[in-house]
Amino acid sequence: MSVPSELPTASVLIVDDEPGMRRYLSKALGSRFAMIETAGTLDAAEALRQRLHFDLLLVDVRLPGRSGIDWHEALEAGDRRSDIIFMTAYADLDVAIRALRAGASDFIMKPFRLEQLLNAVDRCLERRRLARENFVLRRETDQLHPNREGMLGNSPAVRDVRAITERVAPTPSAVMITGESGTGKELVARDLHRLSRRLGAFVPLNCGAVAGELFESELFGHVKGAFTGAVRGREGLFTFADGGTLFLDEIAEMPLAMQAKLLRVIETKRIRPVGGEQEQPVDVRIVTATHRDLEREVAAGRFREDLLYRLNVLTIRLPALRERPEDIPLLVHHFSRQLSRELGLPPLPWQHGDLDEMVRYSWPGNVRELKNFVERCILLGRLPKDILHPPAGDRRDTDINVPLDWTLETLERHHLMTVLEAHDGNKSRAARSLGVSRKTLDRKLVAWREER
Image 1 (cartoon, rainbow, N blue to C red):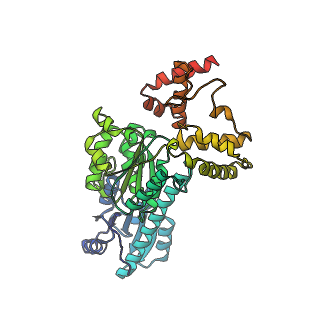
Image 2 (spheres, rainbow, N blue to C red):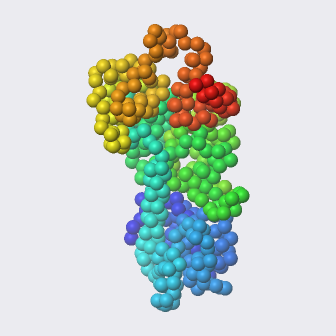
Image 3 (cartoon, rainbow, N blue to C red):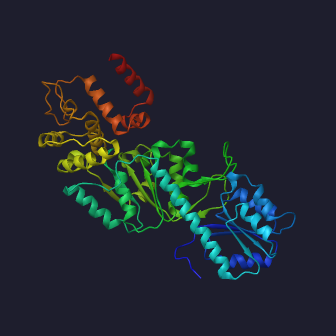
């Protein structure tokens, strides 16, 4: 008989009209589940299922009023989010076939051996674990990542980042990754998870891409009917990250009300779905990232000081690309090979002079800008030097590396477009970074477009 080696996090609802059987099953499954509820009738079971999420339903076939199979068949397809094991004392092949056709995960005969029951339960829990991992893989496939090989480079700054990442990865401590946009914060977060030996999934969330009113549901899930449009229940990202790592990118964009709820989850290690009445335990390591100065955000009243202390146990600062120019040739060759395969085009024969020019450039958009530039070069089949160099006569001898004879309007336009590119064209995030309204940003873009 197998025994779980990790703390239980799943939930089960036992439905049987015999009180003795309910007590026996509750005791037998105590080591497998963090939450166990029981019901003697299908009406009581349905009331519990409407309020709470259950990973597994353990249901007797013959119950007062109607069959457990009838109950399961009556559920809408979207509500069948729980595995179900039917139990019966009547050896009826037709009933067994009907139960399996109704979507039963397993079917066991009473009286059964404890080992038989636990094996059936463990199979269901393993299927759910695999299903959650598949969900995370599909989510990652739908997103575009700069690369997944980790942070590349041999400069002292990158070696320092790798050393501290390897040291803190096996610990459960919260880590905050800071640095300018485009420096590779998610890559470091993935390395922290990969080296942590945690068995759960790595689940990323960009806080700047979630509407404020949907934040709680996105993180904690919701039950059916919790709000308008919640036609079925849904698990949140904390559940999918159970046993693994939840990466909250752009944490400064999280609304204050949500910050308070996140703080409580960190302190209690329990979540409650929106509309639910019972909490469920979770084992999630939280890694955050931001390009903002959070101490300044705290002083401005936009970020909770107590949450900052919880999240900022250790900070890993990522260097800007201009701080490690010796890594640029390595990155150029890496991106060239990667993008050539993806685009189906031959890689460019980079010359030493080309690489020297790229090393001298400041790369305000960091590694993300460099990758976009390499892709543009491959598409054009040449090095567009006008991007790296100003028009003839320009001088780039100022601290911010722009021509001295640029007008203020030209400088503003250049900076705005650089910030917009650093945020992958996301105007809302770019506007927040620039400290202007989205309407102001749109107005300037329209005006500059009309000037062309």
